Length: 534
Image (cartoon, rainbow, N blue to C red; front, top):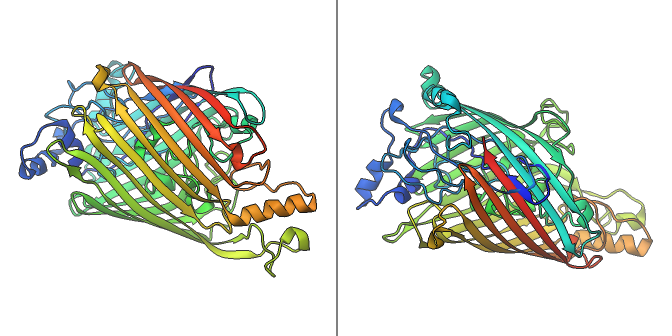
């Protein structure tokens, strides 16, 4: 847990965080029928290094954004069929996972995209044999395109339609296969984006209805991530270090990225808009320790440098020696990945928090506790900022053998410290269904509801601005157009599989109180996304 704007399509491509060599229980569970737990455990264990096979992943999309390149070490049999990035139809008795199974899918996804399984399929197949040659040597390269279109039919600050997009390229190297360095991976991801932010025209920076919203610094290759993984104790412990988007590992639900609204895609708002938890396409210098005590549980901790600047690594992402990196964000998450009943109904449950020991200006108070705008004194600094989350997804009814081939409920709630963060809490609930019941197994349909409440401190600040005749102060979400209280989002989409690793998604959103104010009328938005892995 990648885009570009174009007229009706928004292309979103799947991007997967490269994992390390490990057993993937859940993927094997859903790719074959296993009689008992003993069979299941033996089926999940990778065999010889040479016997591991790359996993397949597909794109997903709507027409507005060039996006995505994700690739990582894993494999799937050469005869297994292509599937969407949510692995709705992944099957194959010889499947072997080599990704570290944090989300039960063998990978920790990166960015505002649904994860692909490592490697194939690609729109252009094996690239004339180049993909096979690289994968046999532990080199995984993917280039992805995402084109995205969005426009408001009614409501909002002004009527507009916007194209945005992104091309992404990821290079992941399995050094065990390449050079015999056991359990060691390196990862590099860069993006090139274009387009403009639809939220500006809409007057709503709170919900961010589009996944791609800008040109990524107007540079040829904006750095998103650059880090290494090393495994220990038969892959039950993984240490990652480097330039890492925190949401690549923490508070991430891959299935939520089936929806175009980015408030829950990748990791959730409000946590990802605070400096200690910034995610794609920003990254923090840091390290993550992942431990799996049992096959179905994990513990994860991370420590990241916090940038006081508006852009981590500058607008290009490459300015890694920024000044002021003395403060730290500490993150923790625990998860459980069950599979219920004879149909192995997969679930993913996680709870976590992070604490940033930086000092941030209070949104309302001066040092005496009154309005800093009224007194003319500086806002007092508050010590530390924290955010917490509870997230889940659970398959209710299985339609086929794929990881997400069935009816799935997803939801969660997130909280942030409201005296320094403009949004206090965020709740969401949704349903997803693969197209198997109507003989379109690679299609997907979904609905979601979100509720976002702004903090009391930011409301007091804005009421003070009105009383004093002062302009509103912008916050982590951007420009403010009125006193902010709450916003609700209703979203529905249909994703249509077009070709290998290629999808076209149609999206509708209804925003109640755009920008969390009553300044503008409620907005009805149509969008599209086109995605492909080349």
